[in-house]
Length: 80
Figure 1 (spheres, one colour):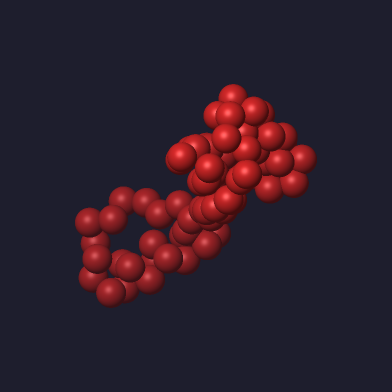
Figure 2 (cartoon, rainbow, N blue to C red):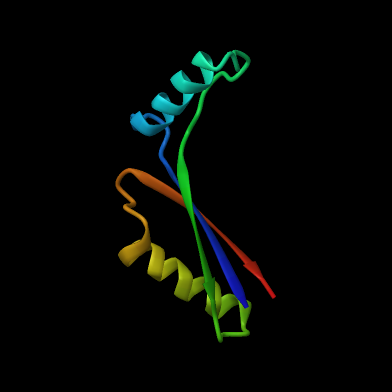
């Protein structure tokens, strides 16, 4: 099973990297972009085949290490 974890800054948290990319896109005349938020994606190959157990384990990984839950949200997608 594969776990795909998308991590992004929570709404209201300043995304300075996103602002820099937005400014660069404006300077390249891509003026129809309203906002840019930068995140990251983590892909884990799991040996667990039970979806419930896999989700529980990956959630614990996110809470304990992979995401800073004070300023970040995460979304988990499991693919068999």
